[in-house]
Length: 258
Ligand code: DGN
Image (cartoon, rainbow, N blue to C red):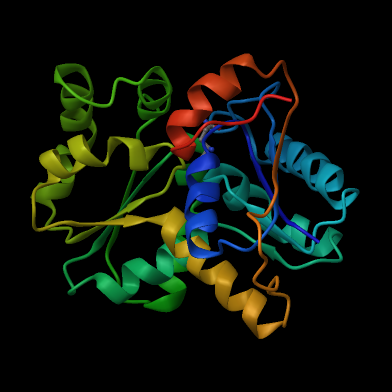
């Protein structure tokens, strides 16, 4: 079967992009819950309910593994999804936290994400589980999501917003910063400019793709190397126009509109 991937909307396409690069032979099914986006400002209970619905849709289509390609859904719903599903379920938080712990040189780890992700404390717990002495500084950056979707990823506006959100990280001596939201890799440039060259940025999407590859290998679930390119199917819960248009920027290639 294919790998199932869901997100609240288009953001998870940055995770899918990393998955496609790391596992070029795998078929994928992507579901963007565009009717209910954003998840980042909703309660954990509601996000869990939506997440179970998304998982059910993908499971009916025969997926062998589920990737929760949304930080907010991973933070709120991972245990519920793992309990409910008969296939392995991976979120983006554990892999991102693990990479950050490997990379920090002891100066502390910063985490940025949606209000829901930061409020849940999921990154903070994952980091402290790996290293109880780690200093964690977490900040919600809600305006980064609309900026990334509107394509305002360069210039004065995102730079000013990034300065407001991130000034504290430089002062607190954080040496590693987790981009704990699917949209933030698009703003890597301005984020790096604000926090400076001594802060290493962790892209949860890449860390997650690596974790998926390891899990598939361990379980003997890797797809055999095929002759042609594998199929990538996309589903949304609202009309597809905006997903197709904005999503191409997140995925780095055109999205077929069936
Ligand atoms: N995909 C969400 C996340 O990674 O937290 C961001 C989009 C949203 O639901 N606000």
